[in-house]
Amino acid sequence: MLLQSDIKSILKQYQLTIEAELELLLKEPSLNSLAQSQALESMHYSVMNGGKRLRAILALITAEAVLNSETQADFKTNPASGLALAIELVHCGSLIHDDLPCMDDGDLRRGKPTNHKVYGEAMALLAGDTLLCYPLEVLITKTPELAKLKITRVVLELIQAIKDMIAGQALDLELPSKAQKTIEDLKKMQELKTGALLRASVRLAAILAGANEKQIIALDSYANKLGLAFQITDDILDNTISTDQLGKTAGKDLKQNKFTFVQEYGLEGASKLAIDLINSAKDDIDSVMIYTAKLKLIADYVISRNN
Ligand code: GRG
Image 1: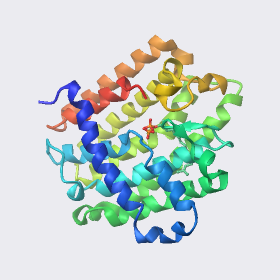
Image 2: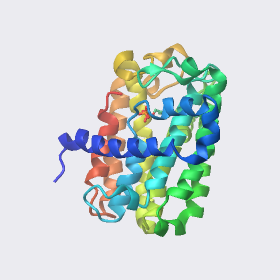
Image 3: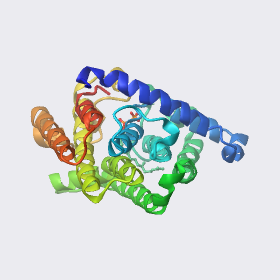
Image 4: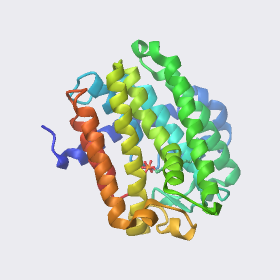
């Protein structure tokens, strides 16, 4: 039986596998043309600079749960292996663009200078661009043969999730200047900006692993709630954790006049909302699968993390 205290070692195991695979992907011959400039080094800097690898882990453990596997499956045969890597790459690209001066203007990411601080804005832009198209190649070429039967649906849904993330980012940029902001505006924006990729990690892994419709619906609901709880926790951490611990500049939301869940509900209210969402997310998956332990542990981790 898995305990809450096992989460650190479980995360570590998956992180090591994912990082080794990401490192290999950045050496693929299809990226050779980018190696002629600093573009590949710039990408490498932002893909391999830490990160919790939450989206990739969610994809892998969702597929394992659907396949009734209690233990970590061999990476290459996990139906969601290509998806896990693809989503992680898109996520890293989105962070590079998010940190640009024309967006969130970040100096620090994962405790290190942001991409454009090291490689300049133009190279950061190009690294982010590459991390938008290369992941689709990765998804198609690295998905194990059997799961490839579902690939068209999965590619199309991933493209939609990426467009939703971009739409969420656009709303995020516009929201501070909107005169009448409602909590519904905030939820919609976060559902798109942060929720879409997290949801895709779970939902598309379930599809690739051959989940039935009931399981897909339950996992989709789990992922939606997890995504919202993740963002609420981000808002709480921005208010309560130091820049050192957070790995990026703390207290930025307030400085940038961002409308957040903490502003709306206060620290205690926001924390209660996140806990309720996670409990409900865990309930969602109980009746449709047997091996839900890791999905539940990671749900708890989403709101107990400190970065
Ligand atoms: C070029 C792909 C691409 C996108 C452009 C900039 C943009 C559109 C989207 C940005 C969306 C964004 C910044 C969403 C926030 C997601 C979020 C909460 C990031 C932090 O996630 P963690 O904590 O990060 O999982 P680590 O560092 O652990 O990977």
